[in-house]
Image 1 (cartoon, rainbow, N blue to C red):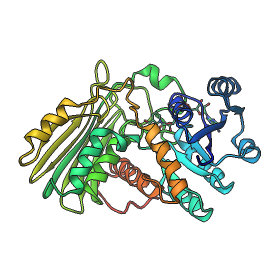
Image 2 (spheres, rainbow, N blue to C red; image 1 turned 120 degrees about the vertical axis):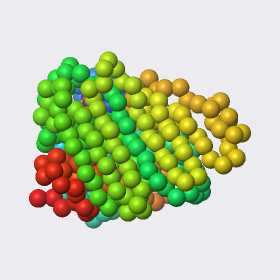
Image 3 (spheres, protein in one colour; image 1 turned 60 degrees about the vertical axis):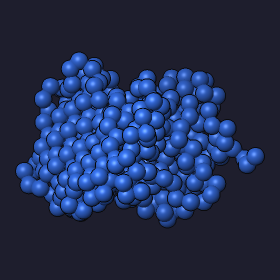
Image 4 (tube, protein in one colour; image 1 turned 30 degrees about the vertical axis):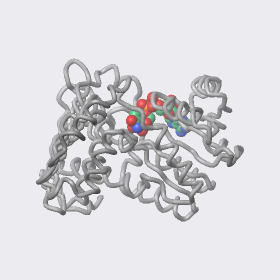
Length: 346
Ligand SMILES: NC(=O)c1ccc[n+]([C@@H]2O[C@H](COP(=O)([O-])OP(=O)(O)OC[C@H]3O[C@@H](n4cnc5c(N)ncnc54)[C@H](O)[C@@H]3O)[C@@H](O)[C@H]2O)c1
């Protein structure tokens, strides 16, 4: 067997166990080091997963023989830590959003390229079984002419959630429900419908005590002529209800719902009765958390990308696309004007 790929995780908070559990479970991977600025968190995480703790990622990068760094800190630090990792020759896996601005996303992409390392953005829902089925139908042209789609996130994040960490819901470090909770589904919408021509949207802070939005709505005009709708809310009473992607074309209708785009709810194509029965009979149940099961597959994809020396499935250029849509919606909220792509940042 090939040598194990050596990983480190930076940021040992809520999502980090998904990284560590995936790395530890993959026979081709090894968790070497973990890092958190809070020493107790780094130590407890290192003890749990059998790795070496650090409180400085710079020190960790300098001392450890690591091949891949996965970054699970607050979102504003993804690009700077990714850039530091790339400059020290490590491949980079970055949580969503890959950066808070297009400028910093581009710097991260360029630095990875310049240093010959791979960059993958963690949009794990692309690996959901239901999403892969829809994607295959799309690639086979079964939808016919794509007409419209909708990405819906109806979740609950209460004031306690936002109070857990000072970066949550802030403009500079997190964004609101569009940037944080809905970016995965917006990524799926744009991945399905292709390049964006223009976007218009509104956001509001209806209930939570945060700087950014807890409700957002937007309309996308895709270059193909198809229309995309986005509905995003972290205010849903009393709990998470759904994350749903609707995909409609002249000869196909697919709705993927469940708690986190994990269950096919409609599957309509010509002569598809038998296929539909089989799909409905082998549905996955809802995952225990909205994070789903995909982290292991994204991390596994990076390992294969290294071994085969190919581009990862979700490179930086892909992660940038949903970021551009969300930043455009934020711009609409300020200017009350549609944004024609590409988005130009001030
Ligand atoms: N893919 C997903 O489905 C998913 C789900 C949840 C969160 N996320 C993303 O993961 C990131 C982290 O979210 P979270 O909810 O785990 O946050 P969190 O606040 O629970 O954890 C972040 C951790 O990073 C640490 N940290 C901060 N600065 C650091 C530094 N300079 N070096 C090392 N560690 C540092 C903090 O101490 C904290 O422990 C966010 O960007 C979020 O958007 C992704």
